[in-house]
Amino acid sequence: MPVITISGAVGSGARELGLLVAQRLGLDLIDQQILVDAARRLGVRVEQVAERDERCLGLRERLAGLLRSFLERSALLGTDPLAGGTGLEVIFSRTYTEMASQLEEGQALEIDDALYVKVLTGVFQELAYRGDVVVMGRGSHVALRDFPGALHVLTLAPREMRVQRFAEREGLSPEEAARQVAQADRGRTLFYRRLWKVEADDPQHYHLTVVTARLPLAVAAEAVAVAAQGLEEVPR
Image 1 (cartoon, rainbow, N blue to C red):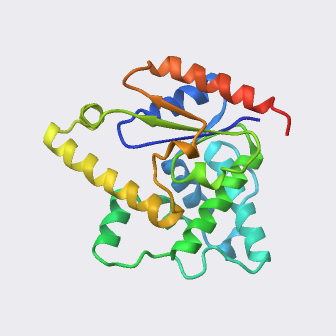
Image 2 (cartoon, helix red, strand yellow):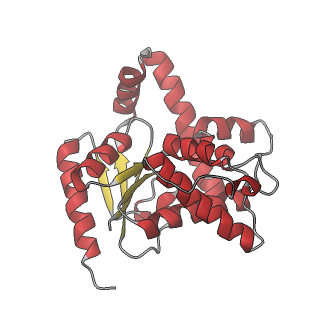
């Protein structure tokens, strides 16, 4: 039951590597959009959870069921993670750039820092206990740093290459791509420092660091797959 987190700045190859690893090992790939979609399917409010159909068909439906279970247990413990906020969708949907803009302008986040981290940690742990999953970024490697058998991977690439990749992927001019990459980098740095109290690319928080400018993604995916399988075999 492999549990792999893959983190990296925009254009570093994290998303592409995550997809390759998930395909190579037959794992579910959980990224920001899938979490947002699952939260929308759930209805997000605890009082509505019991009214939802328990059948889980696709990945998003199965993930919605996992979120439902998490919310039900949290509510039973008297720690409703949605109290004071507008729901899981808010937590999952904020991009690094949006969060940075809010914080730099002195605006308060819709959900306070401690609750934000608590909910993200709880969801990531739910995913890890379920297993067979690749989780993309959002501090998952910090939330699961003590989870037995979890493998944490960081992707790096020179800024110029990241800008070029982003421009090609999004159909942007080099100038606009550079501007958006800079904004995303600033937001990502702030997100990790403020919420997780770590530097985003600090290698001590990862098992493997992949420089995607030097190693083909297919080779990197194979290395990650071998490392994940080997880590599972280490005696606990």
